[in-house]
Image (cartoon, rainbow, N blue to C red; front, side, top):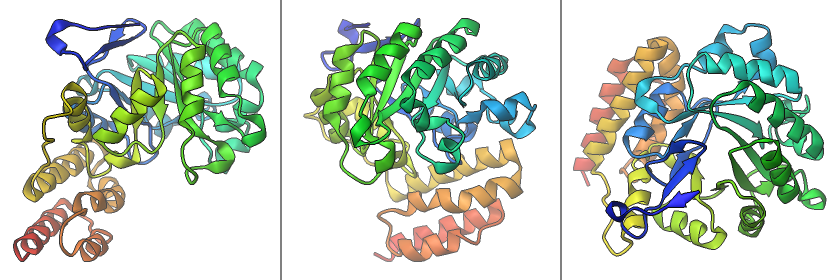
Length: 338
């Protein structure tokens, strides 16, 4: 699954998912309302191994939802890119995968890990782990209609009494999955308790396909620690990248040589990336929709800046790109006053 090239050095291993050779070891997680086309392009620019779309409802696609179809648009500036679909019916998921393939993704990802009640109440997301056979049937149905690698994102299990990640992972591998992402918490734990990296390690030891560790990876140091502890091929990072897409380049640099100091952007550089990020959203979605979503997204870019709380309050009122430029100027003035 992995081979080391002399040019990459000792630490930078080349990982392949199916026939796709990845450039690095950190993957952008699918995040509703965050990992849209603009953000995926930005994270790939900063060195993400690949990225995954916001999750798309197979049921909505069966009803020809235009909004759901728009979530699957993939550009050449964000590759490799996976489209994530969710649902609880194998044939409906196969249909969704066929529709996703019209956007030429590099990977199709199946969500079996979302803990949201509205997703689980329909039997989708984490609820699938209560029925391992159905997990395998869904993977098999999706693999049948795809000519790209199919990956699966799971959790430790539904609860502490059914921590069946190893069983589900083996079934998914047998059904044709090319890689498996494991979040080291149960559905009932959501995101609160410490991540169980031991269960992720057990999954890695139980299957032959690449395994991706997920949960509480928020720095280059923690990424290396998790890779070392679990033996996984890749890590998946999500919330820690908010306002911090250069985390991907930091992880790559640290894995290549942990003795070298990491590069941290200046405040001005951070704010320039903020403008680039939100401007791309405006281009793809229109100013009104993009700026509504940007109110929450820009907050991460103010971390470490003097007066960050007030800047976040101001962010909650932006409506135009002109407002965002004014907010950037306020942030720079705050920083200069330090």
